[in-house]
Image 1 (cartoon, rainbow, N blue to C red):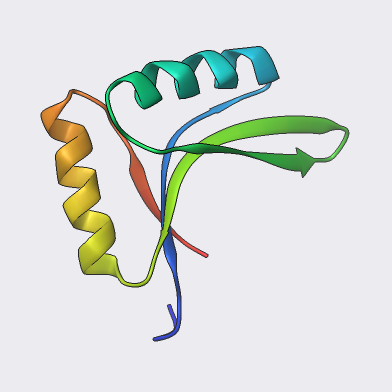
Image 2 (cartoon, rainbow, N blue to C red):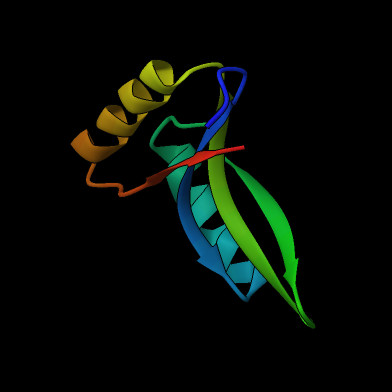
Length: 79
């Protein structure tokens, strides 16, 4: 991972845009700003619910901890 990497937290990935929007709404109601990133894989589109980007890993991990306190799981992804 390069030193100028940015990070996002990925909360989920769905093959249904509506499912991603439903989770986004739920997370927004808990006070977290998240977005949906469509990712095309072959002939399928997956809708990733993500938070960020964050300038460094420490900031991302702090947000990850805040999500965990609300029983929201996420994974750290370098972009």
